[in-house]
Length: 282
Image (spheres, rainbow, N blue to C red):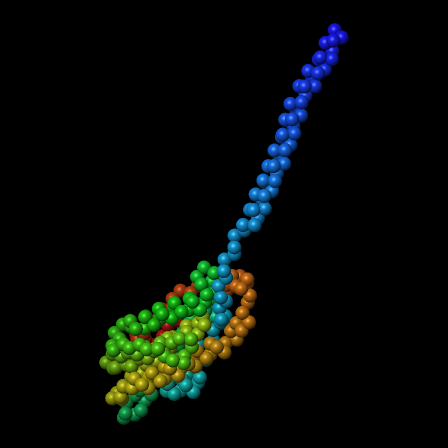
């Protein structure tokens, strides 16, 4: 009995050794996994998604009053005996985005007949939008659409288009003839863009009761003169963003000022004769 006691102690001691080794091995594996997890977490933090580039802020944040965008003297010269010297404003739900004004008058020259003139100016402003692009880019796209639309005027004859230098950032002059109320009308439309604003100015005239039809050169000169004044009025608008916001704030600014920019409908020659009521198109 005495001999078996020491032997039993040795057996128990040997049996305890594997248990200790297993514990040590688990402790070692746990440390390795911890390091791996730590490395994985650090790697995930470093690979963050880059932010999207912001669009350029819109240059103009407001529009001028269309009916005061052209000087009184110019109105008197181009539309003598205008029915409303202050013009007739077109309908608009937001004048900071879209506006228009028109003038028409019949100048009675006695036995020489009468001279009729009609002029319309329209403004459309585009805000910068993260999804749609900068205001200038959107205005450039609309500028092209307005030129194409003008050239496709219903009933237009001898349509011609050419660049108009010195008017805004870019401008196109479109000229054509149109027969209405048994008279021949001469048309000149200037489509121009400055920054994020598109200006469309149409001027036409006709001779009544034996009066001569206005010369195309006179109509063109008048349209270009008025268009330059309209563009200048945009440049002078108090809403011009002289101090552009930081690029980081561009998205927020665009979202705050985002408005509907549905295309304005226009009619190149159905409501500008003395025998029909002149109604401006927005």
